[in-house]
Length: 287
Ligand code: PZK
Image 1 (cartoon, rainbow, N blue to C red):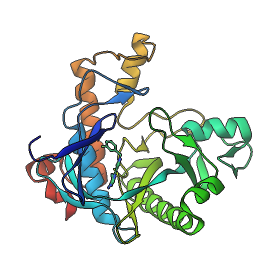
Image 2: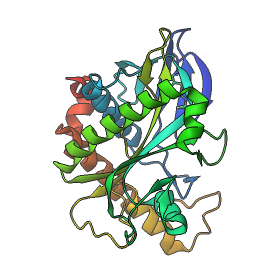
Image 3: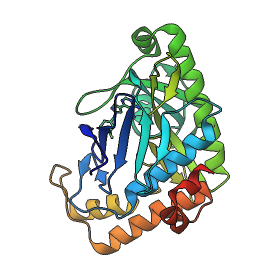
């Protein structure tokens, strides 16, 4: 990547480069992970779908909170971003009872210290969206922490602002998605401070990799819901009896095509933009 600058780090499916002292590049590959393992088979255009969605949300939520997006590159998979000092916490907003929230509820009747009514089922909609902060583990899994711990890590005033911003982003995006047939069950935000000390939304936002998207059609609490994007891959992997340790299995062409189609369908439903139009000119998501 000639115009990329110094490589700063790798996520599971993304790369981070320094452009200069004030700017970063965040580039999304077509790699896919399932059960926390990166598979050897790529999903063509997956990185473009995620980058286009992130840019779409950044453009539409900048009145709720400023974000790090400076420019969307014409490759459709790279964001030029303002360099921030990232907070040592991330925040998950949960509108539905899934994943570790469901496990926590089963064990304790609460989700990260938020008491909930008895008798909720897996995937039920919560009475109100809950914020569950976590520390960013260098490798492995993020660890949920109490709100008081998060507030101690970043300061009370700033944590209050994080809570307000994250809930406002979730409510906005969940309402937008619901009107388009997609449930935003939960989503993770990473925020930072700019050189003036202003709270800024960073990372990717409201993508299928940072969120649980469920098709509204067929939503049936009482068990896990199929993932909008990864379900074919998960089902295929389950059918193999793979033990979910690295290396993962190769994915056959039919499952790749079905999965790619689901990513593109999510992009088109959420943005109202034909994916072909995005490929022809990525700037369409910013208008
Ligand atoms: C930043 N990451 C996560 C790691 C990736 C992503 N605007 C920013 N300013 C400073 N730092 C970051 C950001 C953002 N976003 C993001 N780590 C630091 C990360 C590895 C690969 F693609």
